[in-house]
Length: 196
Length: 189
Image 1 (tube, chains in turn orange, cyan):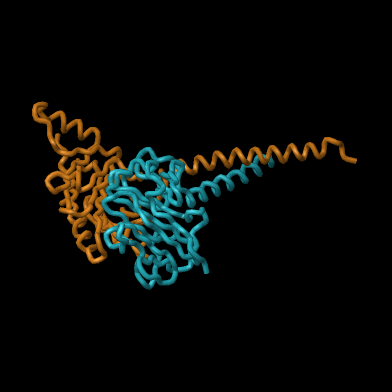
Image 2: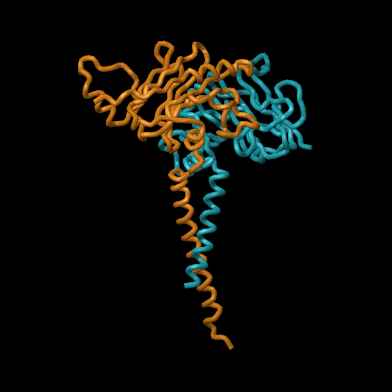
């Protein structure tokens, strides 16, 4: 005959295992969610990196059933990007802003964060013109400037050395997509010599 | 000892499975739901919650920045039922203020679905509208008169509404439910 402690003991064992499993599951879940952005090898930056080198403007194919590189893209919007590496020096970004049509620039880190964006409505004199810099580069540039004549140029501090600039432009009709593609194709990214 | 191993193994599997399924289904912790539509306003900002960030990293999306616009996704209709390719939906008849918007059909991975009509979106600039500026888009598998958005293959689908240059981009919560298109199921096969 079993001692009365038998079933109770079994229940206790089961409860410990269940509790341990639940705690491990919670921990694993949290850790997994937090490390995905650090280790995602197929994120947007990785996908774009496979298309070409740094500083080159590369047009993205129009999103479609057979064009499946970047999900949730808009078939009405043409896109082009250039990757950068600020270890080569600050990055000069220029692009003509369309006269009427929507176009925009957004600045992305290599880990999925967006740190700046502007549309054609904020572009001065019909042109996007910005300098992407690191904190240190910005300090070096401002140190050389006279305080009486602060520069008017748009300087954007990138939190990471690597990232990409994305240009988008809207096509008002399917037949106008080629024009939108030409607009984003005019994006220019160039490293400026790190001045010392 | 064995107890610890068993518990740990179950925990590991359960933890990874739950993380994976959350990332597949997620609309993010900070997602705003308005009627049938959800938007993740912080998607493209450094303030995005860990779930939103991980989901975006994993699916490779390049989200719209706050200053560019706002993307809203409908996975369900107005009654809360999942969108079904065998049904006919009327979507309309208003959209929030924006310089441009598009309304499209995507598969569950976020890509347009192939269809003989070769149409996967309507632009705000190419819609047929009624005399009050309202519109109705019919989402269905078989052809419809007017603004017809084909569903294509009989598979699960989502509706995506993208607003460009909209005053709401930073404050999706400020969008009134009545300003968004309604998603009403009409009939099913």
